[in-house]
Length: 94
Image (tube, rainbow, N blue to C red; front, side, top):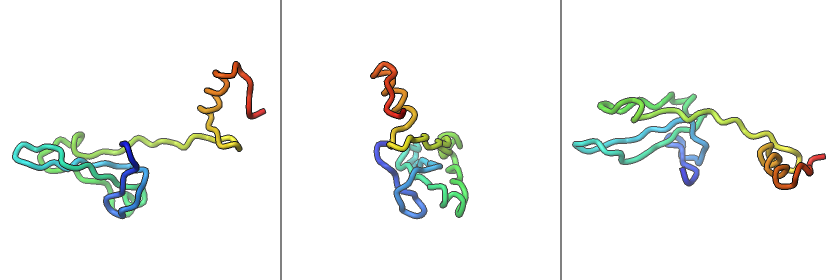
């Protein structure tokens, strides 16, 4: 994903939790990929696989990604680790 997608059900930009590939044609080819946000998934349920397409190629869920913990200055633990590498273990969060 290059840009933040819109939820297929509510139309809001979101961090999707599910995806579905829409296939069409005599020899099915991917035409469109749609997404669903967490609130819509709870409200409307999961995507159903498209008839005639293997379920693993038709739809699925994105792995859960926990938000990175942040320090008061807004840096994440990964940012802090990289800062320490670049500054020979000096710290900005003393």
